[in-house]
Length: 301
Image (cartoon, rainbow, N blue to C red; front, side, top):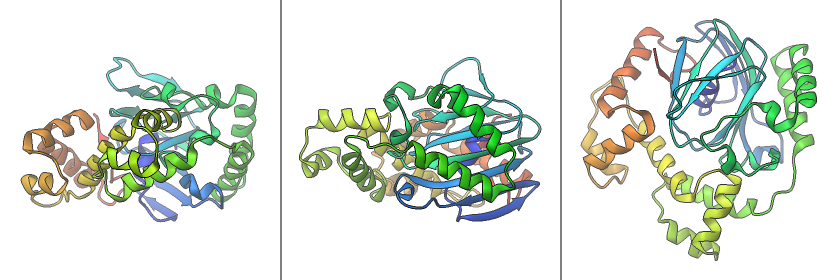
């Protein structure tokens, strides 16, 4: 199935196989050196729990190779959704994405680390920020058609993931500045976005302008923006939607200046207030308990 939102949502799951509510999800780690760029490769097939899902921003990028009916994506404030037949490539977004799914969807994909997509891209990541593109636009129509055909006729999910891994190995390229961005991104992630960006530039021995430029080229956003996304993501994962939420304590522990700042970040990332976000999460839990996708996407219906 092809649910970019769903795929990113499952990135925290251990590698393996899950089949819940009619959805089959198979994931595994790639072999070196891809494991330094990719969180997991996955196969997804089944019926989406909702016709439309909202995917809040996360630090990673992802690529979907669609093997089913087309799906649609509405990015940021775009008024209309665009249709994706062969799949899509998405760099770390700054705004929520809305995915519309067919009744049955099937796909394989990749969850990249923030810097992990760059060695497979012919253009700077900044050109794709909040602008999902088809895989065909990145890798070309003939190559994409051949890859989709090989995946569609493969002997099962594990064979499909091996084929996708081999394709990625063939396309892996040396990328200038990748080690700088990888190291800095790792520090940002380890601190859940709490590290001062000035400290990162001093530690790296580069100017703030140079570091920001490298990040925009290889990640698509500046280090400051990536840190904001990490902090927001860590805060959301600390919420237990099944119980009462201490919003003031949560905001304070996450390092937000005050409750107003916290509320503003929630709206900026999700379009919802914190309390409304929890209501929507609880709806998902109630209507689809134990669903493989219940960790990040939100019902948009």
